[in-house]
Image (cartoon, rainbow, N blue to C red; front, side):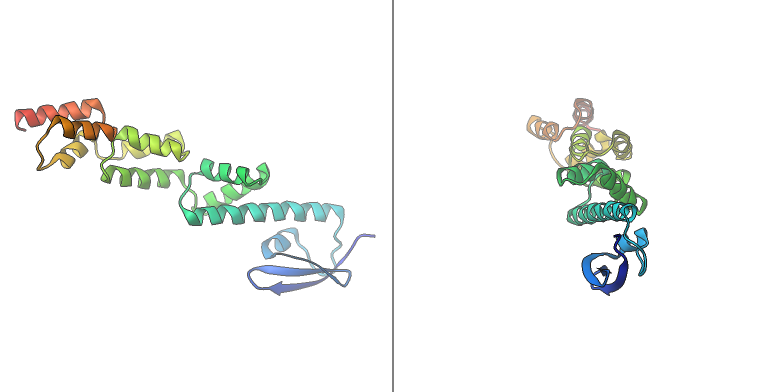
Amino acid sequence: MTPTVTGLRVRRRGRVAVELDGRPWRVLPVDAVVRVGLAVGRRLDRHTARELARELRRARALTAATRSLAAGDRSMQALEDRLARAGHSAGARAEAVAALGRAGLVDDGRLAESRAAVLARRGYGDAAIRADLERRLVSADATAAAVASLEPEPDRVRRLLAGQAVTPRLLRRLAGRSFSRDALEEVAAAFARGA
């Protein structure tokens, strides 16, 4: 016999206590109950039970993804990988990442631009910035756009060297921060000319 929903009671923190055939059954997230359309008098047939299970997987993935973002900004791919390692199904992962993307909480372009700007201010060259964004699994397009939006490397090197004597040691330090050889040579030549 197919059980029937006989009671729905709202609990704290967005949860609903579901009663089947007059007995307590489960406490579920309110969004899953609403999406499936559980209501008093509705039968919990096989189709509805499958739909509810899918919604619960989606809700768990969305909760895990949101918790992960609370710890720090992540790219879409990094978030997807993190959910995969946590054992969430491919469909639930895709839905959670897409929902967070639509809400503007996951944005590779924004992440790439803000991270690139921070690293540029800290004195890193384009190659180091690209490598950092690749490690964060930011898309190639977002990485390229973020690096292109930065002040040109030679200008950043000039700013970093302002008021300092240009020495081979200083140039090696900047090379260690992944400034291109061309940018370093251009700036060293300009300083040698007294420009």
